[in-house]
Amino acid sequence: MSENLKKLVAVFYQASSGKEPVREWLKALPEEDRKTIGKDIATVEFAWPVGMPLCRALQGGLWEVRSSLQHGRISRVLFFNLKSQMVLLHGFIKKTQKTPAKDLQIAEKRMKEVLSYDS
Image (cartoon, rainbow, N blue to C red; front, top):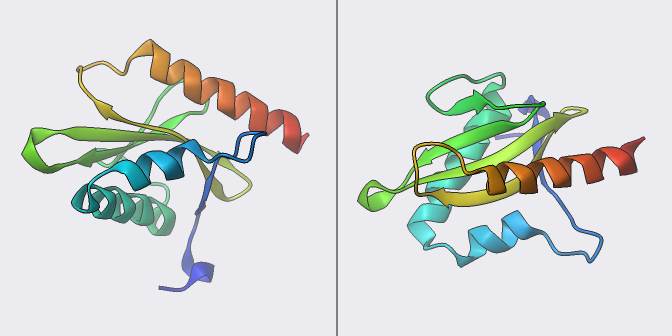
């Protein structure tokens, strides 16, 4: 698969410290989970715009990649679209039906940070 066929290119949010929280979260997951989430992110990159059940719009320009993992678990990677980039802001294993406010706040804070650098 060629980079130039992607409609969105996934990039990791990078904190001012240089850390990439989503990349670090992914690396800490079991290999099978990493493969599933990576495949779902790649599908969004090549097939954007993508709707349910893989991708869903949240609030304020945020989107989520919805992955079904082994043993009935689910994960979410929250992102926003910036100049044909899919900026991966926050990832977590979802434990409740509703996306926790804390996780949305983390993604919103990071999105505002990226947007302030971009302007």
